[in-house]
Image (cartoon, rainbow, N blue to C red):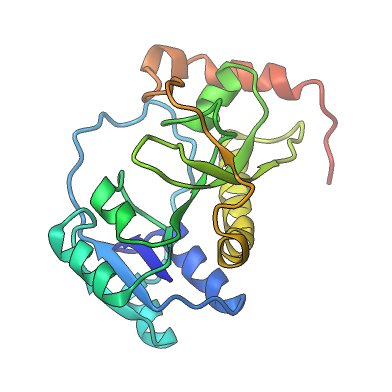
Length: 233
């Protein structure tokens, strides 16, 4: 099993590596993509916590005895490494869009954990778009193809919401649910491959980054959404 990760401390990368190891599903190889500056405008609304004291994935791999390679994910070098390792299953723990040569180099499939219910919440800012469109909040594990947030659905889970939730609470709960689902997704592919999985149809729309003018409405929409719930301890 191969993990696609970032070559810098990253919460999802850290948690997926540790959870899989604890579950007896230790990967054999991590391909870590170097940091790169993205041409994406910063969000006008903060929905994620500011983590601190994260462990570099290189150090996690050294402690667990996992081979660690620093390569651009969509490079020819990565394709050659995957083919030489005869990788059957991949897991995205931190990556940009993976291209077809990389997907083809993993024989069974590459798993992604998406913080939205597919196919309705494809694309960026799934939490914000789910609130804006008054859709359930949840996570989908799926086997990717060359399209954005598409392929074959393994499992969907809706998260609980509470009256005193903040956007950061919800974001954290989505991320925790992603981690809770990763081992089941890997085991499904090990045992059943793509048999019985729901294919996401072609031609469906996907969300782009939410514009600032729409993001400004999210806090009030969330307050209205949660006002019907009761506070639980």
